[in-house]
Amino acid sequence: MTRGPRPSKPYNTRRRRAQHVLVGLAGLVALLAGSALLVAWLPQAVAEERAFLSASACRGTPTEDCLHSAWFTVESVHVQRGKQPGGWVRLSELPEEGAGRVQFSGLGAFLEGVRPGDRVAGTIWRGEIVVLSDSVGVQRTVSHPVGDPLLAAGSGILLVMGGGLCIYVSRQRLRSHEPSARPHRTALTAADACAVAGLGACTFTLMVVLHDRDGTLGALLALWIPAAAAVCAFLNRRHLRHRTRR
Image (cartoon, rainbow, N blue to C red):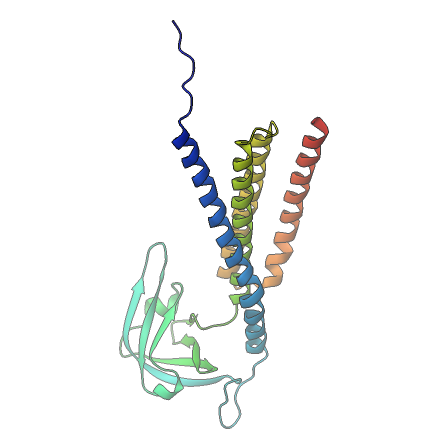
């Protein structure tokens, strides 16, 4: 005697539905966070980058919007290697010029070669040390504003795409449990997810590579827009083909 498939338990159905709702809520949070980055942080980062690039060397009394240099003595050095390389140096002398603990987001010839007791030159802008240098090399600090628009745009795009995808998948999964659910919708959702995930991987790669090479927001958009257009064309074609089959 053969047994048919076991009917799904009500609590399993409720649990899956709750999981889909949580995915949708997580997507909503990511979507709002990405929108905040693009609407709030991106314009501010662009303005600061333009102000820094247009700044000139100070003449006479230093002001916040001009670039001036100062010499510091290194008290201690910390270098972090691994997946998130970086480190910091602690400086002495001229505390009014922004001396103290200066952090770096990556390794460079300066950070790897500097030692306690060395004299280093610092470039100061708006009360922050943006560049440190010695006879070995020059390295930007985390306060350097160039590259922040690219980071804001890339992170915002990733969050918006990921959040939108989670909301879309959650909506389709919840609708698939309804009696009026349309067939072949799961396969279409999987294709959409793969396409958006591929565009997200492309966005992340562009952001990392351009940031390491001192790229700009324009370079990111110039390379990202064709990829986004190709993905949109692919998704639009799939949706049109899906509608014609119904």
